[in-house]
Length: 361
Image (cartoon, rainbow, N blue to C red; front, side):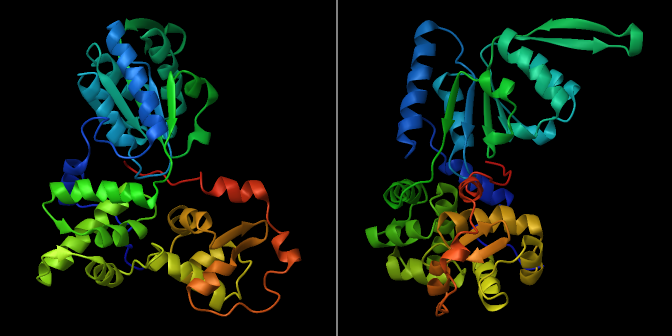
């Protein structure tokens, strides 16, 4: 199998440490997401004025937009300790009970990928969020006894990349829900300027614009690309990063002007050169590029669909006209006839951008 691409790659411990250092510590330093930031600020300020713990908060949206960072900011703004866990780590009600019973008053509990919790744990969480109480079942069968356990008031902050998978009763128990949107290029430039200052890098405006334009609207990717450009500049003895430096570095890492990486281009190239632009089934396409089906569907497809380069139809995936031109191929006549465009189901294309893969924030 091919090596993971730069924009989709996992991070080593050192990389995670650097990423953590770049996270803003309060709402004033958080760039972008103006609507969510303004609403969240009001919720937290009102809670402080009442002298009570904040309402439970749910953040949803694609990976890398700041859900974990906002959870940390909630704890910092409320001057409360933060407990970190995740849905996949809570597979039994007992796992959740152990976490809840050890919380202190006012503590913030952050559950990443909360939609991946087991159903018994979800049902226990309902009562914990609403009544600050859980029932611990002791024994089995007819002799089983439920012992009520009172919990101190706490704030649950949930994060999910797939809000549609959350059960309605759980979603309704959150007092505030914020959906994070992709960042614009100017917003990403602000993120990069702050990160460059923390990393003590000299970057001019053109350099920031070049990196931001290839960052897929995602601050996590922008910071990752900035660190790779920093490495390239260090090795080549470049003191100030400009557009040419950034372009040369990112070209070496196979991240093109649109932000497409090796996997993205492989998917589009296979669609065009091997299947005439499609339609082709997902499993066949994955085999053609030497990747797992889930990797193609959850890593490459959401961005390609959002950029209008790939289409999902009932008969399979097709390469859209911008994909042909971006890769330098001439569009054959009749490829995008009306009868082919009629293959689309509007809700299918719309849901693709929301159907993101679970990923640690």
